[in-house]
Image 1 (spheres, rainbow, N blue to C red):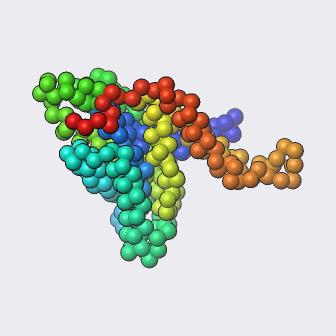
Image 2 (image 1 turned 45 degrees about the vertical axis):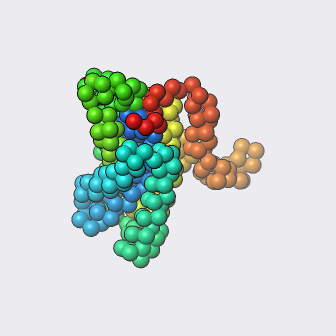
Image 3 (image 1 turned 90 degrees about the horizontal axis):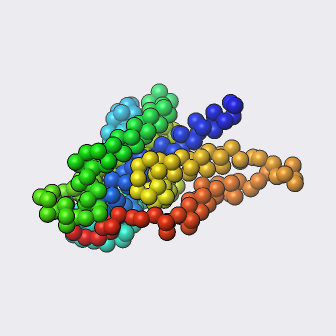
Length: 292
């Protein structure tokens, strides 16, 4: 029983960054804008959170810095794909590359290395319960927003029938722009969870494709809040399981352990299986990726 509870706790902790990023992607893609750049937003959010926490000795300031960084990068992305009509996949990929280059460059200027920030003291980190509870409240809030409020209706119509929304007098460009900004802020909070809660510092490429996993969870969840949340839990469980399988002996050779490289592949294999098995069955918003 203790082992099961421990595994459940690990699943929730490891799922929290994915949930924040997936909910950000949900807002963007339900409004009609593909968000490949979730990975980059998580990267800059995690780095900004670590730097601000080390500078001001407060994880709340770190989270605020992550949100600001996410807003800045998402504003750039939104400007490229909405008024300037850049290809959304190409622009999102470019934002990911930009984040991957900017973060180590700033780290070199601040700390003299491109690898990681200094370690954050224990009393300045986020307790794991905060991000977990925040992620669950976020899912519930977004599910309610999209289903029961006029703002949610505007977001859904921007991604399904933007011309009908415009004919009703709502500014589709504004709805999409604000949705992309919110997506960047939420994905950056996912990155802050990584550096302030799951780790003791920001390390280079610590996001480890979690932005793409969050996007896969969103597709698996058919662009709905609670199903996407369940998919994030699945991926979190796979990661928690691979952590526990490291060092386990081979059944047929008790004196040898399972190669760690194979165990570390588990979350990504689950992602591939999910995408291969369910992506064709999910119906994306009708206007997703189209310009207005």
